[in-house]
Length: 109
Length: 115
Image (cartoon, rainbow over all chains, first blue to last red; front, side, top):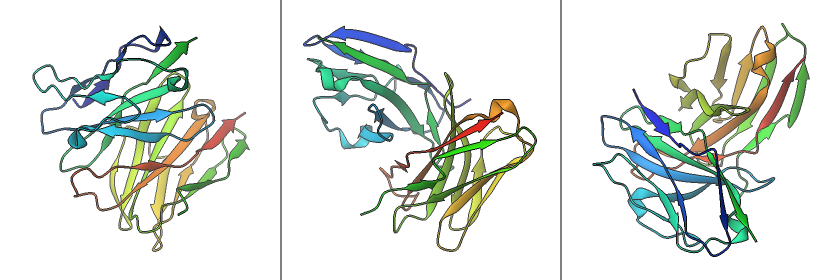
């Protein structure tokens, strides 16, 4: 079954602390993975995607096919990072986007 | 450039009624996705339309249906509304689905409340 799991519903960290939002997926094909973010009162928007291997707003994510994970990391959290984060998988062929249940990140001052 | 637009923003319906939600994709996008975001359940995939055809649907009953028009806009219809249909309905659009790195862009959603 195709599935995206985000085990933490809420993650609270202090400003300046490292952040890691976990994402595991279940998919037998070749996955494309994404992280989407929803700031307060804003629409869901793309943060980054694994094929770009980019760092956006200090966040990075590496696809680990052996562990079927795509964890989102940032070395020093900022208060403006507080938001809801969703991990998503796009299946090949059927091009379906499957989202995890999301993790709310709270960065405390 | 205008993003994905959805209407109405809020809709209140009575159980048993029908609801129609509308979505206009980003100009040039041919694919439209519909998701249901119920409290605590994340985004549940509903439907995907591309080039006017339904390409995929999620695990929802047939009373959830929709269509895509020649201008690529789309509507989602929910018949025989039930209380548990109350949720935020998100529409997203994308360009050519076969392209590596294709991503979807979301609208702000339509809140449906069933009373």
